[in-house]
Image (cartoon, rainbow, N blue to C red; front, top):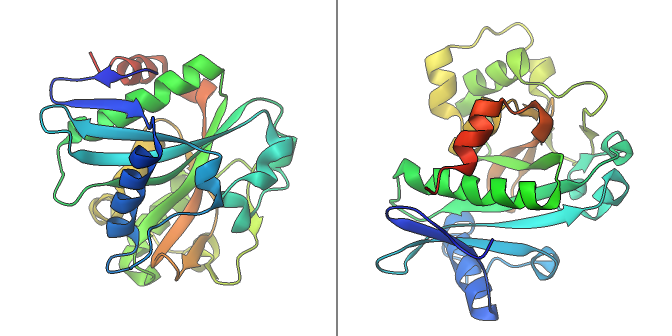
Length: 245
């Protein structure tokens, strides 16, 4: 991807240390408000960073990073592997891509931003023959009760296939599939509580772990999320790839 442009926004890969620093600054404001140090880690050095900018002003409105793996044998090197037991996915035989640190700038609600971000991701997936996209989808805060209906819906409809289901690894987790096994979700409340990125994954056939990690460092609850590219409906796939047109 050199650059994808829409009516108002453009998406491109970071081309300099300054671009990466801009992404880290946005991540700091969104994930670590008030922190003095920038949100950066060792994964940034290995990742491709995508910036979505306002085409008129250059303002950074969204960013995320991508880490590619030849197949599941490399998944232990992913960010997600710190928190989830991914031994089953280590048998995955085809190219994989980890999507991480996805965030949108303060006050930005235009759905065109998310559409262009997914178009950029989709082009990268197509170019590199990626068959599985995965990452951690985050809920703000660490109070699981705030998202009971959302977790109940995930339990009912969106758990990972058993052959890929992540195991518990993190010291603090909420085992929602077990804890909410008798709860019937209120669908409207569930969708209100679902993060936009996770909603997009689910709309394309994505699936999640059966537990959420309590990440006090970033003040989030997150679930491992996977999307098998071959399972994305053809019409949805065409819409994603054409979102920049």
